Length: 295
Picture 1 (cartoon, helix red, strand yellow):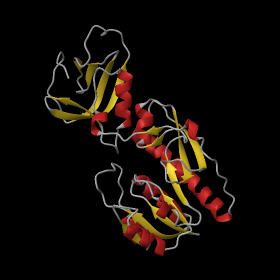
Picture 2: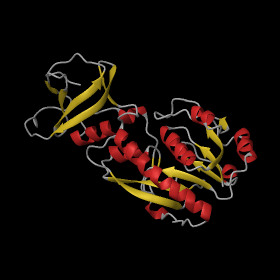
Picture 3: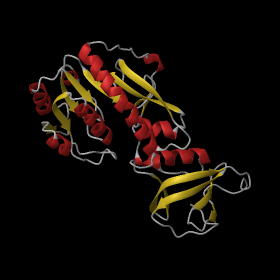
Picture 4: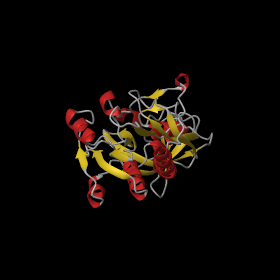
């Protein structure tokens, strides 16, 4: 079975290594240069060169040039793990077995953009690692394999990304074996249960102290590294927040949101939110501020 691989992020790198380890015949890799769109970008070229795998760099996976290159390799299967743009009909029709995609969410729910981030922002306690055959729509094809993943209160985007990758690394060899032997089963998605998460913008990452403490904490969890970080603006300067803790005390109910309650010896800052207060434990750059000031 000849496989053509598409990907451009850290997860892609992990999945490519799995296929190499499983001695899959990888006839080529399509990837891209770092254009700043993916915080978790990973350069696949060094691994391709090490393993003598032909690769093609493109900004447009659906271009005539890309289609021609992929078609010339005559793959039986295309895998697309970590590519943020939809594949068009012509490309989807090249491999006889189809295009195997991946989505880190519990399909048919939560299709669309930034699933790890949205899961944490919304305070969900469950997600999934889902492999499916891609169609022309967003994440709407038949499911090949799905494994549930618990989201714990201590998780952030980094730990959830690692969890997701580890689960997927265990799923993929089984899927490849089933596809080779024709023993895989397909589960059609119930489209009536689907929703599509929208693309996030930089504004979505800005902290509004009128939000509840839990909502702010979830935003910080969601945008932890490798993502760009939640932020607040003070005196026209942007400050990135990497770690917080909720303080559920009723002692400050009469204080306005955004007021600095206390600055601790370790430089962490306690700030009033709409309900409780939140402690900013890790942030950058350093800030000149005192108790009683407002953010």
